[in-house]
Length: 118
Image (spheres, rainbow, N blue to C red):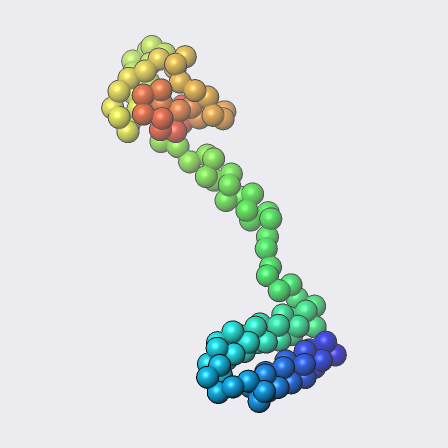
């Protein structure tokens, strides 16, 4: 019902505007008015079918953010010391100087690269 109502109102609006407008503004109305009517018809059609107009999946967002947080370069341990080498800047640093980000993930104190500590 809503789809039919919007179809009638949209058609009347477009036709009425074009008939009552001067010919110089036809292009302006076609560029701005017709896409707006088509979008409202599409939204009404999706709504009438019971489907969301712009579907989003929050769980998918959480999964992607978890992967981004875990993304880090593997740090190379130097001998038996608490020293690690950053693969990005090739500099060694003491683990106590690194800024922890998450469990087993730190920031290199020299270049700021995310490093995974094994």
